[in-house]
Amino acid sequence: MSAAGWREAFLEMMAVERAAAKNTLTAYAKDLDDAQGFLAGRGRDLADAAAEDVEAYFGDLGARGLSAATAARRRASLRGFYRFVLGEGWRKDDPARRVDAPKKGRPLPKILAREEVDRLIAAATARDGAQGLRLGCMVELLYASGLRISELIALPLAAVARDPAYLIVKGKGGKERLAPLNGAAREAVKAYLPARKGFFAKGVKESPWLFPSRGQGGRLTARRFAQLLDEAALAAGIDPAKVSPHSLRHAFATHLLEGGADLRTVQKLLGHSDIATTQIYTHVTSERLKAVVQQAHPLAKKR
Image (cartoon, rainbow, N blue to C red; front, side):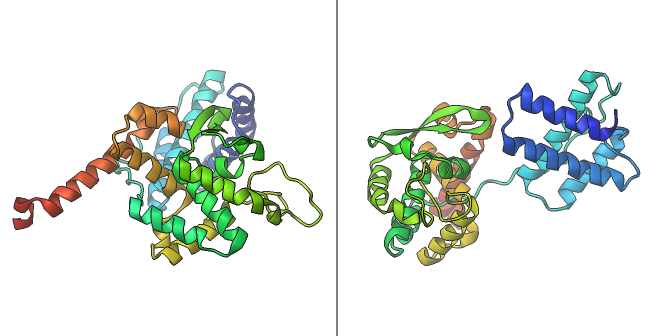
């Protein structure tokens, strides 16, 4: 079987045995295609790559200036692929097994201060009419519940029926979790719902989505929301580079920890399968504490 056949078999296994979501499979496919493209430049492919080829590829990921998350995912995809190939007996070795990733520190996420979140929400809701009600509602929901943007735009209208205190969210891998709604978020939903039909496409009488759109997909896209969020950031006097749908999720987690929440609780609220992923926020809060000491301690000022 060729390298292309191995690739397809791996993706089929991920879909059938691991129940990987469509977006996850697409990411795996792109990652393997990226590795194949690099290996082709060395006269190799996924089937005959040696450990030094994989090491060169891992080094190239860092040299390209990719985000730490993207580079880590591509390395993980290739490692998973070769574990599968080895298990099937198509190769007698795993060229990725003993190759270490480049030793680079993981960048801390950009975190919005509580005052900045307040300004962002105010700027979002200040937009005219229905636009302001929708954008303000979306920002409130992201910050109140720590949703991923993909989870937010996929919310059905039924999710907010009867003014719930929690949302039932289907996250990565189809896993469900409860996401809390505070009073401000619930009020924002109530204010938005009467204006919701204004976003229906012409001729459409009903939509299953909480945030419908006149676009082809019938619901607001992540890209359009990010654009609206950039506009709100500018209006709030915040650098748009600091603001993204994910930065609101980061703010949710960090502010919970700063308020005394334990790490396991935050892990469950974020839907992280591994607590190590959640621990990045403890580093963020530690950095903030250091900054406060440096600014406020008299001896620190003297130095």
